[in-house]
Image (cartoon, rainbow, N blue to C red; front, side, top):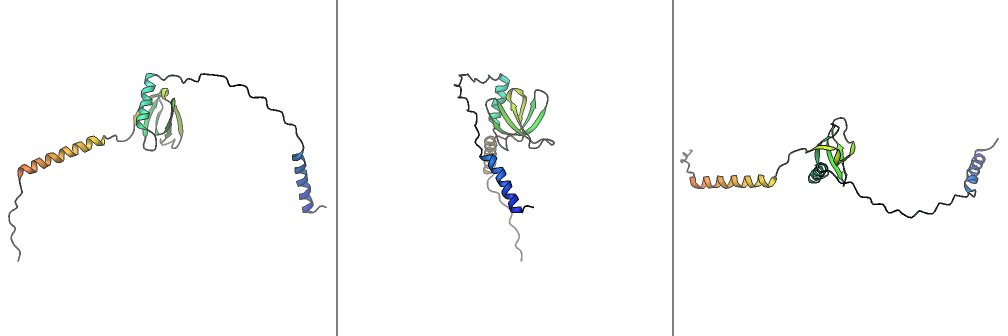
Length: 154
């Protein structure tokens, strides 16, 4: 009967010998010269260009939430994580598909809506300033407000 150390030595030797055998590897063939191919991206239709401009306007990131309707009738909700020349990636936030990333071609989209409140803050500030200016003019014309004297308490 063999001892444990002898068995491990035999096992090690059995694994080491086949690994150190000289093997002849096939020589790789020389690389072929690169062929000149024109990789021109297909032009987008007018509708797809409009969708691409919309995606660029909305931007990307967690705050770039969108609702999308595809040509096959599928409706998606999510946020745009990245955009490229021909496609953009939407991370879905639908109830059943949370976190699923989809790469969508601009030509596959029929409707794109930015989700959330789109407020032109410059117009809000201008309206607020006009309102304050109007209130100042009204109060200026009224003059100082004089309150009747209050009785003294003893």
